[in-house]
Image 1 (cartoon, rainbow, N blue to C red):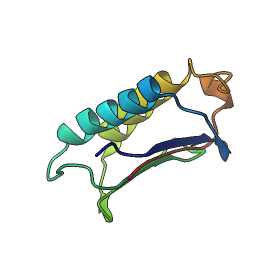
Image 2: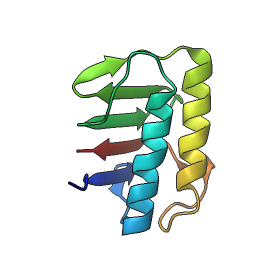
Image 3: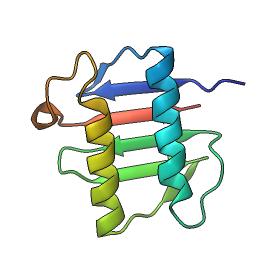
Length: 101
């Protein structure tokens, strides 16, 4: 079954087509696959706050992140969404939320 992927930036929803939705899901899966003690995605909430902190809740469990994974995940996700319609530039992103269910 296809998963539902949503993205909001600065509390504004970003419209995702099939390609972008699948791409975000694949990148999220790759990110989680590189972290210890994670499994397949049933539900995922990935957020970046205005201080650059990344929080990940996978299948209703928080995934702890140290400094380097936080920074590389933040950079990857921001780079991935910057070209999308409705996103002006990385500098204008204060908050970001991705959900997969």
